[in-house]
Image (cartoon, rainbow, N blue to C red):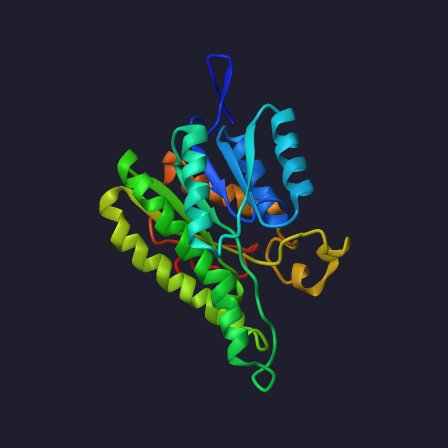
Length: 258
């Protein structure tokens, strides 16, 4: 945080940010970064009420502002009600971070069309629902930010994850088209693409793995690494950036905008 005149100022002071899938792991790290920089955070979750409430309590105890919203972001009507409630609670909604996703693994001889539909249902549909719901509010207030969380698998194209990569490819295409469509309304649309990131199921010795040692930075990502990239894209520092694809994977993918 910046300091001026003896008081702390965050990059996101006065902003309201919704983080979908925000109760744990990468989503929780993103939410903590938003709050650290002064944003009021709306934490969306589907099932884990205890973790969502614990995260919100932790943010408040650190001096931040956070509230929780239970909502299945695959349901467009539920998403619209959530967006309306957030705007009613905070008076505005400046940014949405679409973090919800659910992959499907399997090689070609194991993969079914249902696997493809699963990824579209759990990745693409939530992104579409939240974007359609929030855009009218952003237009009315003169602009906003949308950040979509991707995966380095889109760049790497590993074998055995074709369904998941296909879903991410659809999200990339949708994000780029929306950046063009929504830009005249002052709404930016960008993508953050994590590599292997620590979660509650990551081995403690992950930084000793061949993956970590194969990155130029010699470690896996922490959830806050992803959150910090999102902070930048939501902040005024990124006001002229839209349609960007930013890898956050320790240098494994070096091309921005892939």
